[in-house]
Amino acid sequence: MPEGHTIHRLAHEYATRFTTGTPVQVTSPQGKFADSAALLDTHPLTVTEAHGKHLFLGFGPLGWVHIHLGLFGKVSFENAPARTAAGAAARTAPKADTVRLHLATPTAYADLRGPTTCTLITDAEKRAVHDRLGPDPLRADADPDRALRRIRASRTTIAALLMDQKVVAGVGNVYRAEVLFRHGIDPYTPGRDLTGAQWDAIWHDLVALMHEGVRLNRIDTVRPEHTPEAMGRPPRKDDHGGEVYVYRRATMPCHLCGSEIRTADHAARNLFWCPTCQKP
DNA sequence: TCCTTATGTACAA
DNA sequence: TGTACCTAAGGAC
Image (tube, rainbow, N blue to C red):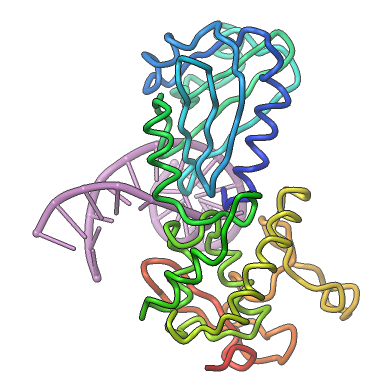
């Protein structure tokens, strides 16, 4: 389940295994990508790229596979030959195959499941995707001033603006909640009231946090002085792994001030914040 | 075994 | 603002 760090890591993982000049076997066991898979089958993958939560697999003149994981999408990699369909069927329950995109070489394979987008697109269509995305803290070409101009022109809350991929690309619900906590910013602050210094701090923190996310393959936002070891509290027992300040900690005490962490439905997502540490 | 939930987005009204 | 879509894990029974 992905925020931008996941997608950048996937771009790197696909590249490591498949941009080797070796022809790649491309199939769609689940069927929804079958026609395009047939077109790409046995061609080499030449380059991969990520912008925000969008992933692009380049097949040279044949175009790009545009992937968006949505809320549930996942990719699994194996550094081993793929089992044959017959072998796989013998080993698994007679449940429908959910693999939308299967890439395979003699030494590795990758299975994509549950994406909201997996389509073959042209260079022009890819450009259009980039054009509607804001700066990505994980890309070297990102211009944070572009984001600030949109933020300062908006009455929408900074919480909602951070999730708007036209404003900033790659930030999701966890980084949004955590970066606002780390800078003591009330999530309901209107964009136009955010100071340049606040945005500067948010942006540079996102760059650092998200690079760390790519490296660890995990969202970890707690400063060294606030870790469970440093503060003598039990580590987080949770499926997401990383240590966080507020994300999914509703009703639990704030690590810094002890106040109950609050949650609210905000623009169709769950927002989490500390009412004491994040004052207007 | 069923139900809920989820790190997301697009589209309709 | 509500709804549709895609999958799998975890918890309640």
